[in-house]
Length: 431
Image 1 (cartoon, rainbow, N blue to C red):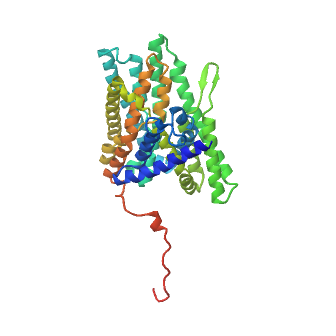
Image 2 (cartoon, one colour):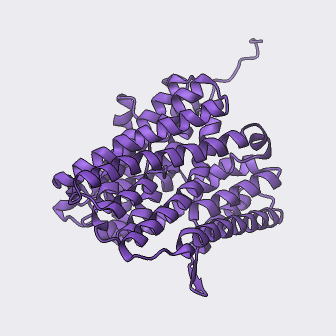
């Protein structure tokens, strides 16, 4: 137990110190936390096998998944705050069309190129893996995007639309993956499962939205019994943790697997709560402040979990590079096409696709499922390689795009330490 506490403390301190270095070279804090995780992980400092100094094995990092799940829940809950009715009236239709376009176009572009690679060199990648990777490519990481927006206090039409599109991306990716993975299994097994391809993903989305709506209304009901800010914040935190726990449940009825999407459930909770609670904005702000250390640990652990051994496999590097280039192209073309279709501002059309490059948790979860394919290991390793690149480069690209669009102010040299200094008393002679 004492080693665990020391490891977590060093992880948080390491992430914070690395963020100071990142600021000098104008990189987002998210990138710094990920790099700190890589350095403290089992392939760098952790390899020294000194108890408490870094993470000695990947198993040690995976054992702390409770922190990652909780952080994802709070991140999704915060994103749900963007789905206010006023926001949906002005941008809801745009976000839905663009969200579908960027996901579907990305899937098609990656599928076409990887299937062509399979036809030219069947021994490199199977048809089933090529199809599955296309669907996984559609997923975008909301956590890194949100952290960049919060760090730089980005605001404007692009930022608002980005938050809505990122939130919808999970549902689009879930459906695309279910259909593609069903086709991949059909190719290998010779039979098609309509239940797995259509019924289960739709049921998962509906159940997630219903559960999120129920917990959102319950949170609003419970919050009314408390009047102090600290207790209202505490009940909000408790409900997010409760929602995360319930969303991890799975069950089978009549041969159909039922489950929930953690991101969708927590987003829906935040959406309902922010639209029915009059003081939701103030509460959301307090919850966000409380979760800062949790978010730092989330990204440090994500960096420590990246398997650097995959870099030694030239085949993974080859397919991974193709995957990364095609996914970026698909995201950019899909987002810009959707923006043009919805007649969005030229700045949004130009930069939205670039802000959708980050990829992490959702894609890794899909790759674990895809590992059951005949050559599923290649899918897992290619996605891991992609996540390694996207997580280190993606936040910086998001920051540059939002800055170029004029939605991030130039960084100043203000310090909370100096800002919090008490002001000198004003003499009676001064006016």
